[in-house]
Length: 313
Ligand code: FAD
Image (cartoon, rainbow, N blue to C red):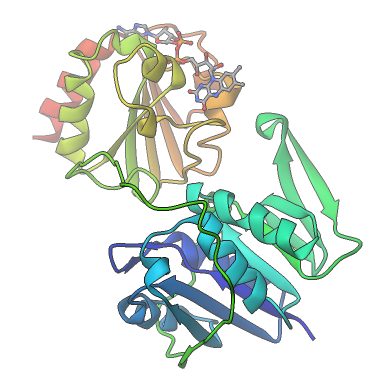
């Protein structure tokens, strides 16, 4: 009998969309049950959202004051304890999931499968390697449960018409005291969240400076898009690190991706390979980005973007 436990990612009382994507991956295993575990000091609102995800059998809440903040060192022993009786434990392959899942795997004495793109069977998964240049099939041949992180860009979010029961779980687990919450520092923006946005406009080294990035922000605001960047733009200090798209940044799957002044290095492309329509604006007609772009505009971005903006009215 296969039963999958999905770890819910949430912040400020709101469920992150990555959880519903991890549930889609869980459903592909065709298990007998998919339960979602919500660790929080006040889990009710998040649990109510999780209960609506299609395919979820039950939502388990673990309410403890220590769970007020998503600290992997605090969550992991509780998830490891709750995992008894489950064949799989899934977490989204986000900063949150990548922090917690390896700890859960280590506590359970199993190895972890990372970045699951497709499910081939209950113990067989496909995942990208070498910056997405090759896809490897991973067979898990020992140890239970299977602990895996799910490449959220590869999975659609499960629907939200469900009505699963919510059950409070009391876990008798001693929590470590070596890790404590100090503060959360995060960028504040009124723009859509880069990882969940339907449209993303990214700028690269070609934008030239922090000040010039204003043209990217302006265009993104015009079309209601999130703003991303290449690593070269981040390294040059044009934008903060959290905006980086790619292998060592965010892996995203928007419906529309507009790459502006970005050459199209493989490490950047690996972050956008699941995007719907890719538009590239680059003054070099030979830039590799045009090999994968659905629509390519060859020219100076400082001329093209204002023209596009004007055309949009
Ligand atoms: P460039 O390659 O310098 O390209 C700039 C482009 O702008 C050029 O094509 C140029 O023609 C164009 N341009 C210049 N001026 C204009 C103009 N006025 N109008 C229009 N076009 C113009 N990179 C990432 O992005 N994300 C990652 O996560 C990432 N991870 C990495 C991990 C590793 C281990 C390594 C080794 C590298 C990684 N990189 C990553 C870096 C990657 O290899 C490239 O160096 C980087 O993506 C290049 O960024 P870019 O395209 O902005 O810059």
